[in-house]
Image 1 (tube, rainbow, N blue to C red):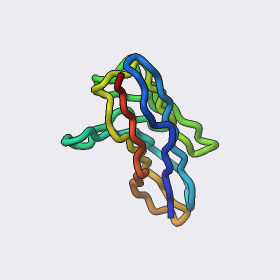
Image 2 (image 1 turned 120 degrees about the horizontal axis):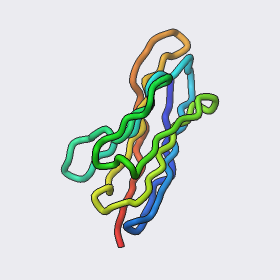
Image 3 (image 1 turned 135 degrees about the horizontal axis):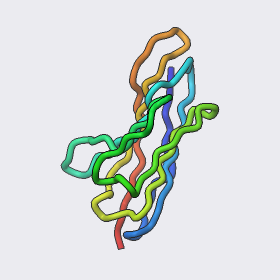
Length: 120
């Protein structure tokens, strides 16, 4: 089994910063793509940022220039540095990873989500 655990969410004022982390653990052979998604109340889950080994990260238009995704392959960890936060960034943020397990089976996995609230 593979587990993803997010951390780093919380309450922050507009203009502030937060750093989210997501650690993957379990029967992992390799991880291809790692990504962050978010879901605001009453809205569908949407991609925020994606990083694939050997490729440049991609970002959703609303977060370009403010958010930065990075990964540490040695730690099976992906980060999301969020700067200049806005109230519209308020959402539950989910980590996603495309994992090949030790049985060489590939599947997507999700974390449990971490709440980010931007409010004064």
